[in-house]
Image 1 (cartoon, one colour):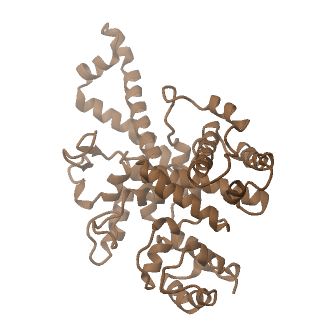
Image 2 (spheres, helix red, strand yellow; image 1 turned 90 degrees about the vertical axis):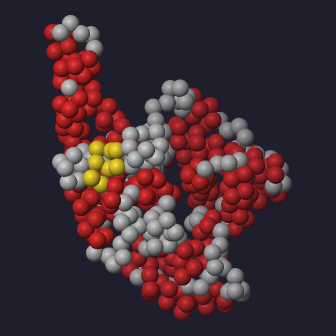
Image 3 (tube, helix red, strand yellow; image 1 turned 120 degrees about the vertical axis):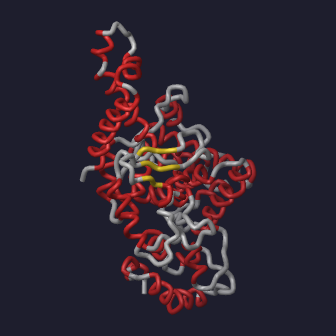
Length: 413
């Protein structure tokens, strides 16, 4: 049975486990694999079963490695589970070694490494699509084809990026990661040269990429939030969008949020964090999303032994998912909704920035409303009027009304 004939998405987890034992494992054995050792993704893909990784990720929220643990294998290196979607094993091994060893030794955060992995995977897949296979490591290591030919291949991939990616910033990030990978191959892994060292695309893309001082950090817009909501197919997905975009929570706060943190009974709904919250107030006012929260609590409350976390995990010692898991789920939802910002798949941070900008807009609208009063009182600063004439409680009510209006518009279906 070929992978194309297998309806992976219709199989339950139990059916996938049975199929593994009855079909996949015997095929791996016939291919000569030692089943006493944990198989790698590439070996499973070579046997014709690459679709299982996607099915596990999209329909069961499991990595391939987590699944292999359920069918009798010990834990392995999580990087082996990534679906590079290329057949050249040498390239996959070198890419993983570069990310796992070199980038981690430089102290790069896992989220940064994940972004680099995604961009390098796009490069490798595009290379394979254009030239039949992604043997990009061996070609520069053997130095057999003329160097000008390999440079033209690299330029061909960059030409594709130029046509397909939305922003110069995204194109330049891809180029930078590709160039650094080839440079690592040249310096540490016996490659003869770096074919991406000085492509003609670089100067234009770099000049069109804003400097840090000029940068307006990428954020979701209302239309993006609305599109994400439309793509949600569960209360968990919708709560993920609400927590990031309507409450402005960080990914770690979303991962560990629990029912006991919500104060809902006194007409002033809020989330209580306490003094331990990093760089922010100890409470967060809920302007929108109570219905979504109630739906999520209702669905979890029906589960036996619910531990109170809104994003629980039975596998984690903490009892809840990690911030990396929240980011991964948010990005999968964005990919499903076909939402990009400046050519990049947004993370929860983009939703948090949307919340901040919405709040600042509410503050500005309130100031505009009282500008006439400020002029009558001879004040050049509307903020003074807000503080001295409205009072904090009234100003707070009006800001809430503005926030609620904007959020309702963003989340409407």
